[in-house]
Length: 253
Length: 307
Image (cartoon, rainbow over all chains, first blue to last red; front, side, top):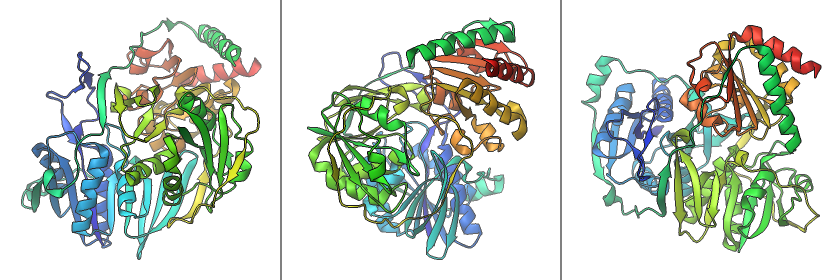
């Protein structure tokens, strides 16, 4: 089984971002960048399947600027076999990303595509589902457990009411949730070795996909600031405040 | 033009999100509500919300329709509509992006404000910024954060049209496990009581459930508390869990990590109970009590049980 796994370079999830005062977007100047955390779980799942003898090859793909080579190297150090960077400096919409991915799938012919369930910058959670629809492959989103059984997958998904365990035939698209596994930190020798692994760089324009954005971002605004309220002195005072709030909630309904 | 609303439900229950979706869609056009999946006809009987002019019913083989079978039905319905709107729930998030891709439309998801029929506001970076978008797509495909909208009341009975059943998808459901506990729906509850890793054990975390019951609220948890096994995954509040916007949010032993704040900063009133006066949640709380939750929680339970 061949696995294609995706990795997006995003502002590190621990960085508190700042909206530019002119409303034109988020200021990423000098922000620490890293692999989208959900993609780390996807890469870990792919590498674990290979180590378990379930996968023959793990190809990692990123779409982004030259600097996105970093996240490909991270995935290669974690154990992926080779990398592909589709290079573009444009901020592509998810539909364009999914269409590029569909082209790569047509070339690479993987049996399984693993992606993070969402990227922590745009928080879209689109690409896996879009790719499955474009390929007409079955999908399992928000996976917290994954096993391969012959030509089928058994996936446990995290859903609003609890957990849903489903079986789907390969080829398939799976998006990773945080409880799928614990991503490894690559040891230094693996990081050195990653640089020796094949990494193809291709221009986004060469795939013949319409990359133009459909949506217009009119402006980006920060959330309303919340002011810190008083520190109460006793449980009795807390109970009194809560009682008043509960009474006003009941008054509204 | 008409607006197609995808009713949200799970395992045979209409989700409270559905009534909120109807409110979100008001003013966009003639509202049709699609109820799809196993038992759809029965669910539809409880879905005559004021403002909806027609209910469409598509029975199906799965209690929670699979993305591929539901997508096919929505693709067939799409030509008659200017908007297709679903909740940002596990159902909506699963099917909507693929539907949009299949129709060649760029979707707008997690919408918190519909400014105009083609102008929307959605959070990015875990709610630390908001994108104001306009779209010239011929069809707008949206998911909505229903917690920010009030529920529409039930109205007079409207015509129900039965569609062809959903075709079986390629995904087979083996097991559906509903998390234990008899609490209100987290994303629509007026009161949410949330706990963090500071509780220290499953047994101590259970006290939070007692407090929620005394207050008539739902229970939430931080990612760390869920990872530690104190709470089931579907209680997680945050960027990667549920987004809640209750009238009253009480965070107990919740430090207020960025990821968690993303899930609850829409709450009208925030209350923090923490040992650390410098905790980020205390900094955004409308009022806070600094102290040990082990001592405070039983006193709160006792106070509100009496009431």
